[in-house]
Every structure is written in structure tokens, then in C-alpha cells.
Length: 514
Image 1 (spheres, one colour):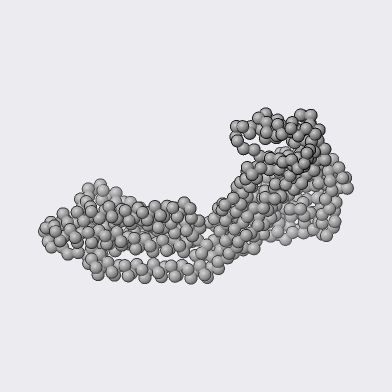
Image 2: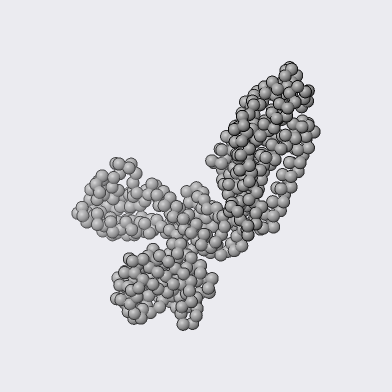
């Protein structure tokens, strides 16, 4: 246990120095960056905002159920099923059908032209139905169908939230899924929480609809930005899905901020056809159910470029362009929990954590030196090396350090000392019966190895479980604790053991007290 080959010594110290160098990167200035890596401070240490968002899929379910109207009507006609009294509700479709038995067979058929194709293959179905009375049928989404809608909406919402936050320029944001309907957003160092809340609170559903009294497609009466009441067609000329870029600009005659947009090929075709066919009419630009502006179509617009104006400030134009670029949220997002941590509180947390670490570190060093003299000094050197390696690994991973993470580092100090105490106490026992000092130390390290490994591996398992099932601060604690256990074993059984072996081999014939 005390013999080291030259290659082993080289590998041990090379690993230590390479990892420890990364810990020094946290002290480099922004002007003299060598490697752009550092440990990031979490929300509780540098201040910022914590938001827990929840998707509201009611409007999406209504939209999805409406999209089933034409396929179901076509299916009924293709199979010669007479129906009547067809109604579209917020969460279901209802109608009367003459041959209910035939409809039931059609609903769960294996054929491609059924309501739920391939049901026998996938053992799941999107739509379900029930008989309200003898001939009245209600069609609605099954539990599987609702779960599919929610999962899709949540994943899409997370991606769009990420785009919006990245566009604002927030550094090191944390955006995670929580449960079936919630999104956790942590924004360390955020200075404008209200702006972010407004950006995340808007679905940004953009569409272009003609100002018209034609009731063929239905009429909505909405109020525009200037207070004018307008009747607009429910038929959507073009939606925001066809936008490929949007930027704030100042292009109108009054030098007011506007939003310039660029359309994809399909959008340019739709927009060009609509403006060509409706010269002289007004085109309403509707965002989240509100008319932003309703300019007149003076000439066909076939270039695929356009401008949205609406008495914006430049900040409002910038935010609108950001929303349009990032895409529309599939559902509205509700803020169910909100916390803001001020930078002063975060600074106090850092000071308290560092003070606790320094005090604990000094007390441990004094005790180990008092208890084990020269070998206590070796244990203290191993402890310093342990902390350097721990911070170095956190820097390599660019981990986010939280207050519980600092607690994990403090606990690592205790765990590191515990390993050396177990080893030294075992060596003391061996020195009582062994005449050879070299053999006593070698046996002490060998026999203490199992105990030290058992103690650290069980703690490592607990840290892995906390990381797998915990969230937020709990994960921060488990990461620093887990890495600390690995560095503890390395420094105790490689660095400290090598330093101990150097002393023992040089003083093999002398009496050594521990």
C-alpha cells in the first residue's frame, strides 16, 4: 500500500495539478481571459427571479377539437352515415346519427379511414365518444389524447420560453420541466423581472384578417389600438407561423417605431394573393385577440416583407419583434409561483457561506495538527488539495453554485477529515502490536480501506439518489457532495498516502508516533 512507482506518482500529481489549475480560473479578470470557464453563482447567491409557469391547455383543446370537424364530417359522408344537428363545443363535438351501430364500428376500425386508425397496433386512441341518448353522439379527446396534447404543448412551450429568454440576453438561465404542466424558470442576476413576465405571459398568436361584414366565415368585433370598433372576418388570411424574421425599425413617415417582418415562401404567396385580391380594403393585424393596427391595402404586397405599426415605443417594438421571432406559444402560460431574490441578500448568503467554510476549515486544521502532529499536517495538505480539486471540477463543468451547494462543500471537509481519522486510528492500533513501522502503516491503510470505502460509497449513493429525484437546491447540494466524495477518496488514498510513505520510508528505523 505504501509503494508507489514513478509512473504512478507522475499520474497522481499530474491529475491533481491539471484539475486544480481550473479552480484558479475563477479569479481571472474579464479582460485577461485564458479559458472562459468558471463556477456560476445560483439564484440565491447573486439574486434574480424564480418563476413557476403552468400551461393552460383549454384553448388548445378547443382549437384541436375544431380541427376534427372536417375530417369527421368527411368520414361520415364517405361511409354514407346521415347526421344532423352538428354542434362544436369547447371540448367536444355533438351530432345526431341515424345508424349508431355502424358509427361505433367506424370509430374503432383498423382501417386508415377510421376516426382512430391503427388502434389495434398502438393500443391507444386519440378520440373517444359517448351516447347522450338514442341517436345523440358526443366526440371528445380520450385521456391519452389529452396527455398527448399537454406533452406536446409543454415541450413546445419550453423551447419558445428558452428562445424568448435567450433573445433578452439573460445569462445562465435555468429552464426545466416540472410535472405534466409546469415549467420552472430561474433567472440569476435578472434586473427587469417585470419585462420578462410580460414576455412570457403573451402567447403571441399573430394573424392577419380582413376588415369585413361578410358573414360567410363568421364575424368578430374587436377594438383596435386607437379605440375604434372593427368587424373582422374569422377567416385567417395568414398566421404568424409563416414569419421567418421580425426586427424593430423606424420606417413610417412620422419616425415612429415599427416592426418589420419577413415571410417564408408560402406566407409570401398567401400574403401576395390576399393583398392582390383585396386592394382598397383594410387588413387587421391581430395579436392575442387584439387588433394592433388595421391599415388599408393600397397595392399588392408580393415581396414577402411587411411592416407592423401601432403607436409603439421602441421598447414595445423590440419586445413585439422578439415575440414574433421566437414563435407563438401553443397555450397561455400562467405564473403560479414567483420569487425575487435581491442582490444584497445573495451577497449576504455568500459571505455567510464563506465565513462558515473558513471557520470550519480552520478548526479542522488546528484539531488535526494537534491530534496527529506531522501526519495531521499531511491530512491538512490533503484537505486543501481536496478543495482545490472540488472547485476545479465544478469549474470544468461550469456548474451553478447555490447556498445548499456551499453546504455540500462544508460537509465534504468533514468527510475528508473523517477518512484520514479512520486511517490514522487504524494505524495506531497496528503500531501497538507491530514492531515494523513500515508494516504497521501498510496494514493500517489496507485494513482501513474497506471502512473508508463503505462510508463514502453509501454517502455517494445517497447523493446520486438526491440528484436523480431532487430538484433545484437539492440537486446543487448533491452535486457538490458527490464530487467531494470522489475527490476525498483520491486525496486520502493517493496524495496523503504518498506523502505518508515518503516520511515512513525515510524514517523506517526510527520510532514514529502518531
